[in-house]
Length: 564
Image (cartoon, rainbow, N blue to C red; front, side, top):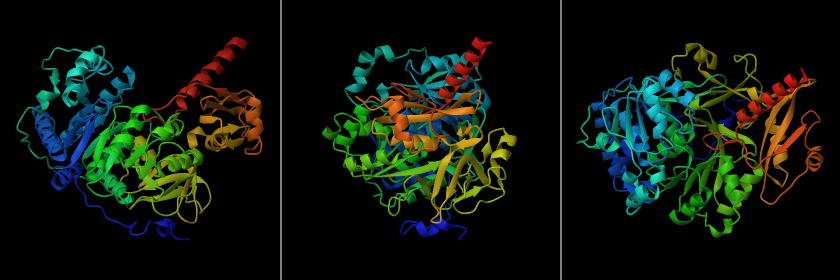
């Protein structure tokens, strides 16, 4: 069997064995500005900026950051939704020589403090919104944070929205008194744009600290170098073999502060000279209206987004046929959801796979060629996927046999920030251990069985939640589903399913169990089923098990206390 069985499955005209030049990540923007200066670059709620305008703003932001002392080794945080200030700040920090640290606006206070202190973030960029600024005001008091750079919505909205926003949304705006700790975004960019170009070593210099729980434990900062991110941007661009450079529109709904959207929407969008149509958050009606009127051609998303689109009660009123390529990741894509979306839009929807630690994309189904249902596809150019023994990462598993999925490639992180032991446990002999269990078939396609940490041990038998979820998704009444293991005094753990039903549908536990009995083994059948109006989701909208696990753990502990 070939050491790279995926090569025979590669799309026509695309080479797996490629060498990508080592460049600073900001070369992506520089090249786009040079090639497409007068093309539209960003569209934010109707306000449009050309590549030339964005390039000028980034240069001025870089000069402004250098005035604040930003250079090699200096960390600057971004506490922003999708907006022009995010793109300008991100590339301005890199061009000044600094390192970007992404912060989710959904973080709790303790999470913000931990990340600010751990990363050594002293400067933060945010907006004057009540959802954001008060949290950062607290950080000025409770953490090492020293300065805030504060943008406004009015400065990035088109006329007359820029005038109406402070009036209509005055309840959302947080006022502040400018001083040496509170600087306006306008102050940052109010200069001639002359900055000292830093000497960047793309393979060594860290462009981004992206915090993640990793395969286990508390959030850690994945050190992603300029080369890691530049390579993954180029790999992603190569994969979309049908892109028309300088003529695409990318719908930017996923949050840029998450690594999937940062690479798959922002960096790749700029790399192909696309116009990025930005949304601060996923609002179904607004997204459908923009697809209908602004005609985006590419849309990265997560499965729950496509589920929501499929189930919109007035979907037929919107024309989705401008979409030609969509990529999903972060969670399994049910085949029924994919087929329904493709039938409605005419787009090709492919499933990919990656981790924060791999910048993130490691594999993907091809746009042209065989897409295997349930597979995360074949490795990206220059990337290898290896399946190893779950207990011995140096022992490869044969084709078709399950084991831990490992990634090799130029997009694999330099390590975890200030955590050499965690790095040594996660990257072994150049292989990134993902913590995911899967297998590879004879054509080089990888199939995920489940995450090792999510596996449920039922009386000594392994139950993978993904198997149970895929069976439940086959029921026509189910819109969303997630399965976890809950404590059981006799069996150790048993599966529990949480469901969100499609509008107007009802389902009984008995009827669902009858539906599942021929689709699952006895040990896999959920012992409990709970229907909810909504299921918990992560910051990018994928279903989250963590909150449910904590709930069930507390219930079990409370029951034990009551018995005692």
